[in-house]
Image 1 (cartoon, one colour):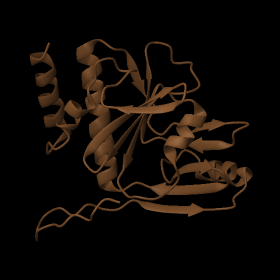
Image 2 (cartoon, helix red, strand yellow; image 1 turned 90 degrees about the horizontal axis):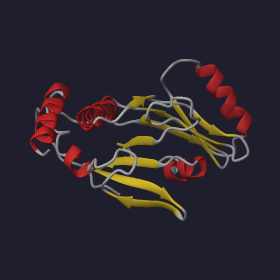
Image 3 (cartoon, one colour; image 1 turned 135 degrees about the vertical axis):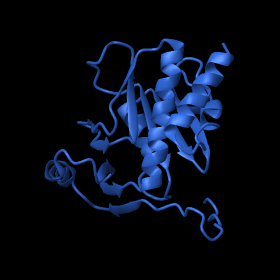
Image 4 (tube, helix red, strand yellow; image 1 turned 180 degrees about the vertical axis):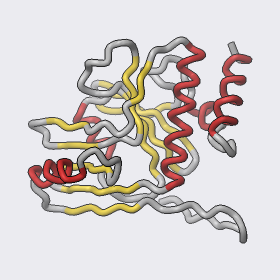
Length: 203
């Protein structure tokens, strides 16, 4: 449990995600909710073991997701890595009856025909909800990043499940501790500019 933060008068107070979890829900209800929501981006839906989660991300959640995604793309440009973002791609498996929609996800390389992303990014802004790492492991996603309480952790899928670390395997050489140091910039333009300058200076 992360301790609540104290804010001085006039400081920006983070907003909370809106999250509802229903239990004892059949898979068919999840499928219906996906159809009813249509092409809208919210709420994001997840399903695991008869539990259905509805999550509407806050402004701060979305800001962090965008910052992380744009910095991943800066790294890829500098390193000459081909990738494509797919944002909240609805990921499901038939027999396992599980589903999730990442905050951000990427296919690495030129082949865009694969059924799963290589990299998923999740921002844990408000605690609670379904075990997303369990969902992604059952789906077989190669790598998952979690931002929580100011830090990013990498979870790379191995034979025995996910192994935690700080350096990406699917985006070679990317150290999330370094990337995370640029998330405090006041604008994403400044974050991209400073991160790019750091990467170029480190070559």
